[in-house]
Image (tube, rainbow, N blue to C red; front, top):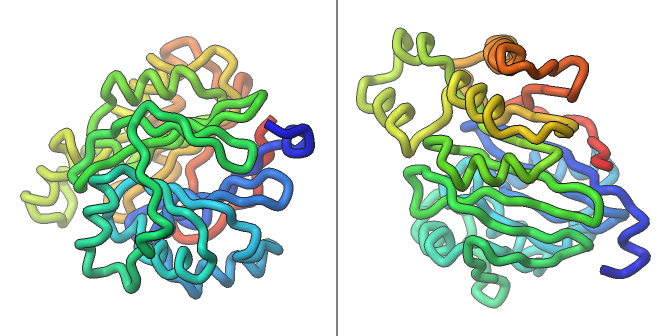
Length: 275
C-alpha cells in the first residue's frame, strides 16, 4: 500500500438501503469504490452532485448479487466510466440474464472473484464471503485498510457461520435487519412471499440480527448500521429497539460502547469517517 493512500481515513456513505434500491460507497481521499448500484442512474448522479462527487472519482465497483435492487444501474455506470466491476461468476451470469438491467456490464470490464480471495483497490482490500440468498449467488464483503475492518452483508437469508465469522472480524458492521416477524406474519404479503422471506434464503428478521450481533460482535466494535429494512414489515425504531434490547441482555451497552443506527431506505446518509 502506498504511503499517500495510507494517510487518508476510510469514509462510508449509503445512497439507499432496501427493496427500492441499494447503493454504498467507500472513499479514500478522492478515490471511490462502489458496492452495488440498485437505484436509478439519474438519482445516483444527483446524489453525487449533492455530495461533491464525480463519476471520475470511481475506480471500481463490487456487486453482492444479481437482484435488480442491487444492480439496476451498474451496467450503465460502468459503461460510462470504464471502471472494473468485481463479482462472482454466478452473480455475473445472473446479471447477464437480468432483463431489468437497462445495460449490461461490458465484458472487458468484468472481473471475476472467488469467495475467500482478496482484491486490492484504492488502498482497500476486499474479501468476499458467501451469504445465503435466493439469487443466482450472493456474497458479503470484508473491507480492510491498515487500521480498520468493515463487514457489509445485505440480503442475508440466515446467520451462517460464514456471516458470523465476518462479523467477528469487523469493527464496523453493516448487517441486514429486514423484518419484524409479527408484522410479517400479520401483514398483507401473500403466503408464498412470507415463506420466501423467512425461509432461510430470504432475509434476516430483527430477532435473528440481534442474536447474531449479540453472539458475534467484537468487544471493540465501533459502529453498527442496520440495513435493508422492509417498508412493509419493519420500522427503524422497531429494528433498533429489538437489536439493542437483545444486546443489552447479552451484556453489551449500545449507547456507551458503540454507535448503532438504521440506514434509511430511500435517501442518502452523511459521510461517515471510519478510523
